[in-house]
Image (cartoon, rainbow, N blue to C red; front, side, top):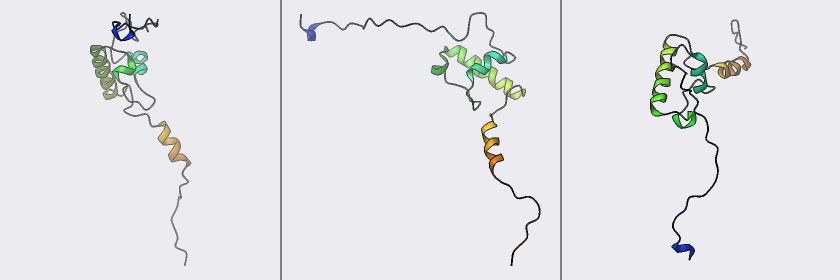
Length: 101
């Protein structure tokens, strides 16, 4: 049989199916900080659904929980650690400035 006449076949690559990041017993809630923090980037941004490997419903619930936690001040809106390090390295002049003539 010609290769051009062969029907399309899927490759028989074996792959390991990843476990879902949220178990059936995990409750998606704004108070569950250990669960919520897994879905935030270092900068404090909500990670995408593709990155998290979540269903659409789970992603919506996670997003709502994160936003509620931010409003209640359980989470910061942004992680400013990197900005603070950069600002501290800039020398600042304190005291009154004098004009040199």
